[in-house]
Image (cartoon, rainbow, N blue to C red; front, side):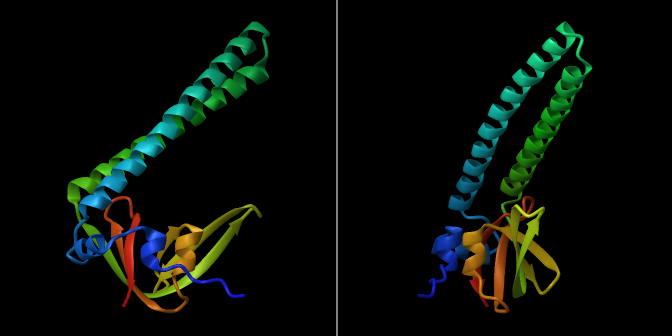
Length: 170
């Protein structure tokens, strides 16, 4: 039994109004709200992760000092650096979302789409759409499966974050 290919509208979660706004070169009200919602979700996860790592680093540094353990102290410092990187990535996400909402415009890319699955280290899988072999868009597996290999599409993406908002066969 063959699996049914999901349609683009279902896979990407956009409406006819969203597509019409994208064709006109702008974000729809619904897409702006989804970008804000995605940012809030990312912010919540980042805050929880930063707090947990901060507590772990604090305990490691404390016990490293109390026990005169260079290993615990080093691991505590390494976790502190990782925490700083997470804060930086969170700030970058905020700046991209702010840029998308401030501009309110979309980037339009058209061309033949080829689908590429990348497996890194045997466990991390990335689903990549290549438009005319030049521009790459990383998507979820559901979205990846909604595109037909070699068919021409028009992709509408947020200007700063490059998030794929909608697409249509052209």
